[in-house]
Image (cartoon, rainbow, N blue to C red; front, side):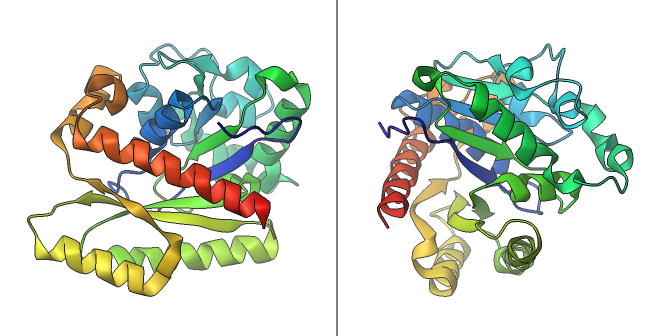
Amino acid sequence: MMTFGSQRPRVLALANQKGGVGKTTTAINLGTALAAVGERVLVIDLDPQGNASTGLGVDERPLSTFDVLNGQATLSAARVPTNVPRLSIVPATIDLMSFEREAGAASGRHYRLRDCLAAMAAEEAPDLATSYILIDCPPSLNLLTVNALAAADAVLVPLQCEFYALEGLAQLLSTVEEIRARLNPKLDIHGIVLTMYDQRTALSDQVVDDVRRFLGDKVYATIIPRNVRVAESPSHGKPVLLYDYRCSGSQAYIQLASEVIERERQMRAA
């Protein structure tokens, strides 16, 4: 287990402006796998659809990320435990749809989540401090995603093994560069995780080869396979690691968590 001591948590934004790439699934199951090896993990659901919240079995949401971003609640007050030990979530509601309109042109609107995270880190007891925060972004490059990128240490990009994968990735990488230049100079690409890989198709192999050639060691070695059990688990309100620990999807997310932790060690040692 990585020990952060008195240092603040590592904040990873899971982002891709394309929908259906496995972003929420990765947030849920990577968070579960990290918690399983002893990390204290918080998932922040920034998608108005609230799929990460549903996928972790959270139905009642008296406080949400909308309340947090509007200053009506703290992250600590809004976070709720899940069925996974050491994993909690700040759930989302459809109210997030109005965040951009509510924020308007207010000063500091890009930094609301960053400021809330700083306040949470300052009040946490060292022995109960969160070590990883995973932000599940909406499938668009709107003000919610900008808040996530402005608050994050790094971006983890789920990328589906499909024909237009690299086209969408180029747009996201351009946005990351813009955020780094304007709002968050420390923002980095933590890694690209290839999802929904189908070993029966030549296309999946071609996408893997193209992405690795384009981005080199920024691409995680772990590939998430297309797996029925992964697709079924959200309807049961469970991460796939609780739904079917032995399936190929569960084992892939365990491997991904190991890679994330190892990259963190390397980055902290550099």
